Amino acid sequence: VIKIHTGSKEFDKLLGGGIETGAITECYGQYGSGKSQLAHTLAVRCQLQPEEGGAAGVAVFIDTEGTFRPERIVEIAKSVGIEPEMALKNIRVARAFNSDHQMLLAEKVEDLIKNDGLPIRVLIVDSLTAHFRAEYLGRGTLADRQQKINKHMHTLAKLANIHNVAVYVTNQVMFKPDSFFGDPTEAVGGSIVAHNSTYRVYLRRGKKGTRVAKMIDSPSHAESEAIYILDESGIKDA
Image (tube, rainbow, N blue to C red; front, side):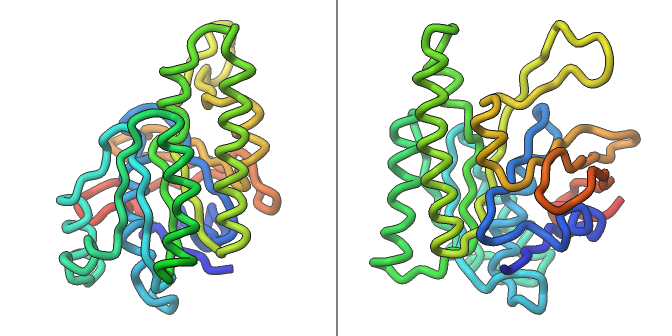
């Protein structure tokens, strides 16, 4: 198992050393909580050598909402000492236009590893549930939607396990209007996404421009929180 560093020691500690290969790490939170920033950071940092907190590999970025920004990759690459041109070459970006396309792209990642011999170490899906949420409206379609998300998650889990890839997925949130106490936000996708994710992390805005990551579900970590900030270099300690 390789642990890919996030750029924040506190965040790495929360994850037990970094984003893990062979596992699915899901981060959910409201817009602006840093989900896509972490995606960009991982796409660059996985290219570093293992002793530098990377995995000496290539990243695949499945973009469902048009969030991928090459200029962010350039900024983060400069901050970690990677040639920006090289950093961009080592990221395969695919734009998914609907849920079926998204599922197909995930299945094609195996071809890149087997046929093209690419050392893929990180697979990013940003965001996992956006298309499913938009296409399957109303309670009548819920069973179909959950079945498809389940199949998609199984494809991702298989990639993670067989090819030792770190799968990082971002997820949207919805508000539970009936909760009077605590935080009313809940991840989209219900128990299907929850059961298929190895690690679930909730991201939210903190005080004075900080962000807070909270470990919600993990097979081996205690529930804890990490405070970090976002800047041009990606993610770092507050």
